[in-house]
Amino acid sequence: MEAVLDERIESEITSWRLPRAQASLQARFWIGLMHAVNAVLRRSVGIGSRGPFDVAAARRRARFLENAIAMVPPRSVFEADEAAPVPGEWVAVGKAQPSRTLLYVHGGSFILDRSDVHNALIARICEKAGARAFIVDYRLAPEHPFPAGLEDVKAAYRWLIETGVDPKRLGIVADSAGGGLALSALVALRAEGLPMPGAMALLGPWVDLTLSANSILANFRNEAMVSTLEGINICTRLYLQGHAPGDPAASPLFADLAGLPPTLIHVGAPEMLRDDSTRLAQRLREAGGKAWCDVYPRMPHVWHRLGPLLPETRRSIEEIGDFLCEMIPDEARGGQGRKEGRRQAGGRP
Image 1 (cartoon, rainbow, N blue to C red):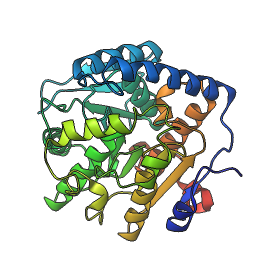
Image 2: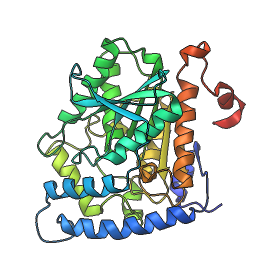
Image 3: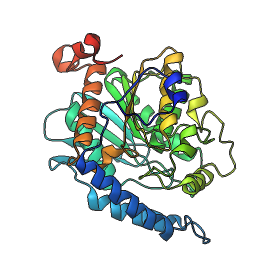
């Protein structure tokens, strides 16, 4: 089976698997389109040019493009919660009472706000997992540099626990930069003595701001969704603003990861951030935790956002939903997950 993985990764981690060797025709079309669109977008906001990076323009263009391709499930209901300590919205799909609660931390390189693509992604995960989710709209850099966004995610988690959400029936879902924020938040909250959630699903998490991963250099020409080497460095500087990138609070790959919940990680083999995911799975397992890292050949960064038209997206969302159901008890079924036997029958390592 073809795998875009170097020998170093194969020797470092044994918990990865390759669900599919070739991308579907639909995925190849979207990946090609994203390469072309992002090339234009990068120039328009100052990446690869002599002009300054335009944060406002990056936000406008990213929101326009992402909203244009978003397909939010038709029965999705979004509601703001004025009682929350940080801005955000609840989302549920349909009228059935959800069995689980999720905290969703969206991506966006620490500088981009939530779009309908993020709304569609978490709504579909809620639909598959029988869950409702609180989407935290954390503060963004450069106006609010590290650790502002992290503090907002921690506040949202504390609030959920304080308002009576059972941590055993609570899950974390996060993508890209949101994955790093979510992981850092759990490490800090665990140190405070708060109970950990029942499960965590991370999609292309960015957990090493030192940019030390081999895949940063190896894959920057293959990446369709993350900007460029220059772009990822710009976003890191805008977020940290002089703070040490190796601080475990900023780069949770280097934190003490003991005591964290079972974690499913999805990443594309051509991603610049691929090694963040594979190294994170390894470190979680070395710390005594349960972690599974699924590496999808040819898939771009957080391909889950590309909508239900792609078979890879549908399959990935289904897997995330199954994972959350396995790990988080369903009160209506006497504490059993939807597919409890799948995990013990060899479905996961």
